[in-house]
Length: 337
Image (cartoon, rainbow, N blue to C red; front, side, top):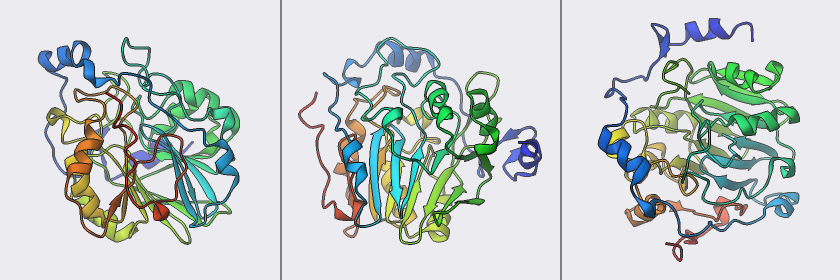
């Protein structure tokens, strides 16, 4: 994109050659030696005792959702959203590792419910930011061949081009900018998030990170990407809501990085700030990226008192569900240590 650098320089989030969050936050430093040791050598219960079950969604995608809104979780932050006739895929990671190379003991907890070759026609892909557990080189090398338009945060398009994505298919937008998917009536809006970016020690915050509002003629969805708790969530709810479905990250949480990840407690607070509705927790149960037990985030989330007029849904990976038709969480993880 010829205007990429021009758009980056004009962004209010871009300052002194780097992107930044709206509000000051504690510096994001490297892990202490204690955290480093615990991450690589501790916590055997961080991994499930056996591969997690998944369901095959392919046949169910042939029917249309009655409510106009259906979601299928693939694990971590990869979700297929069917909204008012359009299909949108978020942060596609189909690889076995959320890292630049295989890490011992860090393999995906469960098979991918459907391979890239089995996906239905996708109208657009949202790429929230460039971290390895959200932007997978292996996955994009394959997806690039399908010719699917991708809408992403400022600067991320250059990374996608290196992975083979046609630059004509890439649309980069800043916070509060929108892009309508042609022929669908569905609009994607990049919204503030409190996080950071980078794929090495030298490229910190050279690209932007975003949360996303997805607005159709009948339904509205919020996708958090990665974010810490920020007052901007209330503004997002007012400007882009009310939402029929809110997808918030709850895993890979730790007090050491509480400013840039929600975790289950702050996810409930964020949910209320956004206006409530139906909550689908994401970013848990697929990769070992923190120090907690693999199912602790969802168990903690369900233990928290929530507003009487809201609900939480937890479908098994690969099961397409219509949020408005699900009455209560599915506790599929309980029998697994």
